[in-house]
Structures are given as C-alpha cells and as structure tokens.
Image (cartoon, rainbow, N blue to C red; front, side):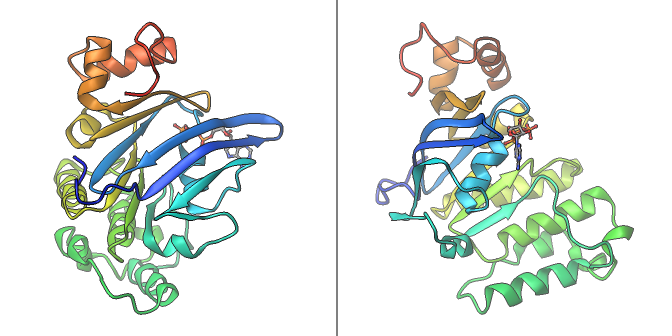
Length: 253
Ligand SMILES: Nc1ncnc2c1ncn2[C@@H]1O[C@H](COP(=O)(O)OP(=O)(O)OP(=O)(O)O)[C@@H](O)[C@H]1O
C-alpha cells in the first residue's frame, strides 16, 4: 500500500555489493523501500538480510553501490541514522542496565526530538519491569523493551530484525498493530523474519534474498500469482528450492 502523494522511495539501494573475507555476501542488490509500505526481507540463514539492514544503517560499509536515504547519498554520513528505529535480532547492553537506563540513554543520544511515540511502553506495560536489570528479565521482556526503543523516536524507517521472536501471542499482536499504524502514517517498515504467516499478514512487498542476490521482489499477490501458491509459506518454499523464479520472467514484479 504505497501513498500516491509520496512517490519517491524513502530508501533507494542501487548496485550494493559487500564481501567479507573475500566472500560475496551481497551482490549487486537494487531495491527501494517505500513510504507507507511494509517490506519483508526473506531468505535462508546466511543470505545477507542482516548485512543489508546494517548497510542501510551505515554499520557496514559497502564495497560498491549507493544507498540513498530521503534522496541523499548516505556514503560517509551517519546523520540519517537518527531517522531509523532499529530493532536488532539480539540487542546487547550491559546486564546491569535496566530498561529505563536503555531508554534514557537513547533519549540522551538523540537529544530533544520533535516527536516521540511512547505507545508501546504503555501497550507492553513496560513500567512493571522497567527498573529491573537486564539479567533479571525474560527474553520476551527484553524484546518488548527493544521494540519500544525502536519505535520511541517516531522514525521515518523502522528496521525490525525478527521482531516477534520470543514474544507471546498477546505481545505479538500489540507489535503487529503498532507496525500497521506506523505504515498507515506513511512511514517505511522493513521486517526480517522467518515467520512467514506473520509476514503474509503484514507485508506489502517481498524481497527474497538468496546467496546475497535478489531472487525475487514484488508485491505479495504477484508472488502468489507467479508461484501458483496460496500462501506465502508455499511461495517461499518454491523460491528456496530454486533460488529464483526463472521461467516466470523477471526477478522483479
Ligand atoms: N562482520 C562479519 N564478518 C565476516 N562475515 C560476516 C560478518 N557479518 C556477516 N558475515 C557473514 O555474511 C553472511 C550473511 O550474514 P547475515 O547475518 O547478513 O545473514 P542473514 O540472512 O541475516 O542470516 P540469518 O537468517 O541466519 O540471520 C554469513 O555467511 C555471515 O557469516
């Protein structure tokens, strides 16, 4: 669901390549992240999904290619990070830190932003465990704090790596509603997940990565059409088997 009044993509990646120790991890990737859309990055373990997220954040320096954020080349810059809410697969901070420490540290780093979104702090009832040290929290409680932190500064782009891993069904439901609300407000959301039923509910666009290349990208209905599958799970199983949909024309739809 792209907002017709906001035609330029928030993020444009062109010809992105990255090698680690001589081994290609991302090879000539080009994709757009639209405002008002949820993009799902799907692919087998080691396909390069987290590396792509980190390249967008400026935490991984590409060997080739460009990443434009809101029209501006991000090479050598980090200021666009303030417009990104990142929820990593594993957030690491000292075990003695409380959730409140994490949120106030982030607030200090960001300074006084014009907008704050504290809805997840309330919806997740974080106050109940915000003063406990990380070592005393369950995985799901930590995950709720991480999600609240990613949403806190009402970012233009939310990068969510396995966001519902470890969340109970009630907390997952809260997070999914929050993701839709952000999307409907015209912001861009990227979700990396292996939970395909969830992505089918949330995603507008699929980017399928295979061995560092885009095996397929396009809208969910187009992927179902192209594969003849009735669920995203079936369609992705088909892509995983072949890496791409050769015989179905272009890798993009
Ligand atoms: N800093 C690094 N140094 C060396 N190799 C790395 C580094 N970061 C990632 N890699 C390698 O790059 C490849 C892609 O890793 P990445 O974490 O992007 O995959 P992924 O698609 O997110 O996987 P998963 O689904 O398991 O989370 C892997 O083979 C990984 O070992």
